[in-house]
Image (tube, rainbow, N blue to C red; front, side):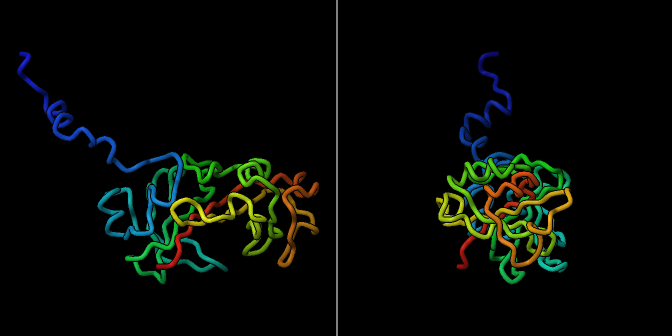
Length: 203
């Protein structure tokens, strides 16, 4: 009996690194994992199989665009992937949204639902947020040369957007309004991260 190997054991002996090559399904997102600038729709489908699906994704000002979604049935794992000019051969970046109010992924130490204080800690200093209540409301417009505003290891950059379900004071609303993350009125409103983007440089 000692000479009998199970199929699984034989596979493990033959391919000791097999488990390490499995694509990640949660955890930290970097400039190369789980999506890299060199990926295409084809390579992502090969890697993730049925967990990579083409869908219409929300764009600016109510528009939609074709993108690829990883884990479309698991809202806390969902990743939306965009392509440059809609060409599925060139990945432009990926986005996490608050579809489940939380996420099993994180970027540079922050995740969906993170507070102003969480992001300020990750950034190393206060940052500036756009006024709420319009198409580009809640986006961080200036990380003030903090950690999150710098090019990340591997060459990608990060965008962060805050959202709130509360009634927003006029002083914190509208196009043209910029508010520091340590502003007492913004801290009282207590918005949380509703979207995180990882963006690749054009190639």
